[in-house]
Length: 422
Ligand code: EPZ
Image 1 (cartoon, rainbow, N blue to C red):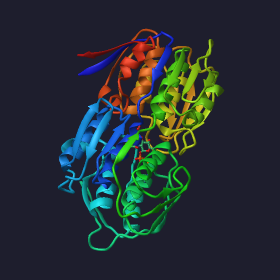
Image 2: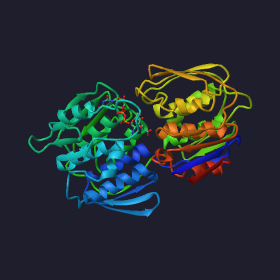
Image 3: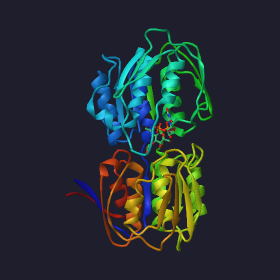
Image 4: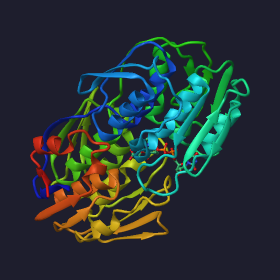
């Protein structure tokens, strides 16, 4: 078993370079299926989830070569099957993007039901509704999503999303790019990674407008070409390092970011007493000398405060002066880390799985903890960095699903963190 062993108490100081966005890279990797020509993708984070996507592309028959750790050359013209069946794909949520991409390109797909973090119910009804609106038959069995667009011609249409869903918005884009006619998605997700997928597709000949607003229009084109594209920086990795600076009372320059993507995080950090400076592609976070201040947080779709930063800010508020409330409005069970955090002395109670009441304590005490999911695991690392004494955190394979070289980047900022085989 691999663990992080952390001795807390060091203020993080220095500069950190942010990797490419996992949640943009995953659908863009699937989107390479939409063209027969070669794609060069840069700034792809080397994390477990992207490695599984690459393995799946290869398993389908595509050629994927690593030019360096973060640059891939991909040619999917040799794809020879439409059923995704490599066992590791079941571990990740983004597997559903193969349904949209294979449906869009080959009019059929069979994909195992998605796995991913256990953070509450994660329905597929919006994906199903989108595919059906385009004219595909959709069957969701106990183990698979089966989509079939061979019986009726797929055709562009207008659809209304009942919930704001990142995955469904992107999946409908993937399925409709090569579908004749105009597809309009009303109530679309506005997250930066939705925009990044649209920019990638437009760069190789697609015709998508409105990405980043709640109304996206896709004019079907007959064919896409090849090209090069660099994935945007990871909003959540950047936010996690910003929170690490705050919680350790440090001073960190977070490089290679798009500051506007971080506005909701920067604004909360200011509220709790941090100083924020920003320029074109960096943000500097200076933690307060005294205690952090209390606040209220509610997670919301972009541009609101991201659910993927909820555990990290809750951990910071556990050390704030006074009582804070954190409302999770996207997922119905995203407080799985709370029992672990209590081991450190955090004074936190969760009501109905959606609202955390936190009465800040002056310090955390090191503890042995298990990471329950990706962002919660990162949050426990932050708590350990701020704690007195030593903490061991296992379950770090979750953290490595989404953070490239997390321990190394933290060490470069002065953290006392080791990855050990125990
Ligand atoms: C994406 O998940 C991200 N995952 C998540 O990041 C992120 O937390 C989430 O978007 C919200 O920003 C990837 O991009 C791979 P949703 P996704 O569809 O697409 C409900 C991380 O830590 N819903 O926007 O699965 C759903 O249950 C991960 O990197 C339906 O009810 O999220 C949830 O309550 C964790 N029916 C809400 O909508 C549907 O058909 C938002 O889900 C689809 C979603």
